[in-house]
Length: 258
Image (cartoon, rainbow, N blue to C red; front, side):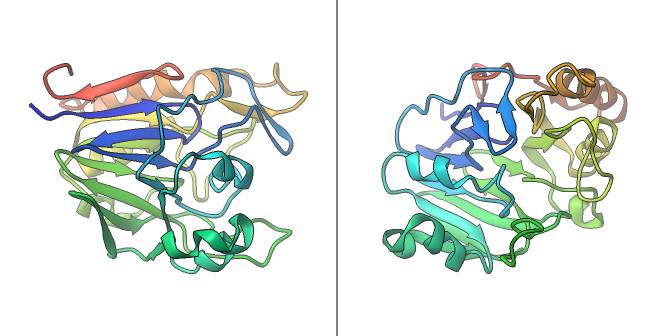
């Protein structure tokens, strides 16, 4: 029997295997990113070259140039509409032929798997120092399972149109001691998102990995706690959903081993 598996390597770096296809999301493969350091878990140990890399938006903790340059092989790079030019500028002209832009509603085949861009409520700019912009998106991957990778997002009305799902990979926190309400989910709002998409399984992501240098002891509950708090809220709002809080490098398999 075919299975779908997901391995969480911290923050939003996820290795998703479905129907013989391997996908890598928003890879951060280093111990440090600008003013952020990895406080938990080892740097990701990729099992090989992915077939495609899904890039949800241009923020450096999701579109990390140094990490993308270290991804093995020559995977398809699936990026938001408007991001191809920046991708080529950042990674070199050699990636131009394998860079695919998607807007919400667009999709592309990766072998037998369909990758569809879906909306996300999040700022799409590279940062306040940059003029680079592209609409932030999430992805629904359709193979043996229907998996939603939300990227980075706040709540939005169209979430109800994404389900039903087999698996939801939902951001539940952030990388610092404060989390702005606009364009982000905390544990409670992430549980509401799960309720809207009606997923059979859920894995919390985007927490417990990166933290500002020198602030390791500051508001540590916001670093360690969001995954378990999400599971507690989800038990009340979506009692039919099974939530798996993964350790860094941990894997959830849907199928006979689930």
